[in-house]
Length: 131
Image (cartoon, rainbow, N blue to C red; front, side, top):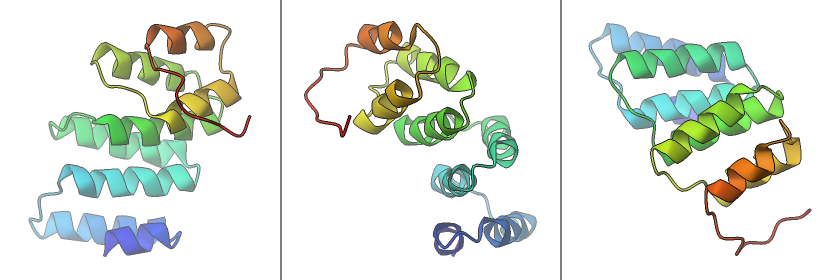
C-alpha cells in the first residue's frame, strides 16, 4: 500500500499510512523504510528523507546497497556533500556501488576528489552511460 502511494508521488499519504501502521503495532521492515526513502528522494525532500534515515538507524536497521543508492542519489541531485560521505561509508562497508550511483556521483561532480574516490572503489568500468 505505501509502495503504491509512494510510486504515485503521494508520499505524504504514504507517510500517514506508514505512521498509522506503526501506531497499530506494525513493525516496519527494511523494505518499508526503503520505500519511504525512495519516495522522499523522488520528491527531492532531503529533510524528510533524512528523518526516515535517522529513524531507520535508530530502529537498528543497517543500510544495504539499495538504501545507500537511494540516499546517495537524492543527495547528489541536491548537490549535497553528504552524498560523497555516504559513498565513502558504503565503500568502507565493502558494498559495491551500482552503476547508477557511480554515474550520478560522476555527473554531479560534487567535489574535485569524486573521481579518485570512485577509482579507489575498484568498480570496473564495464558499463556504458549516456555521457
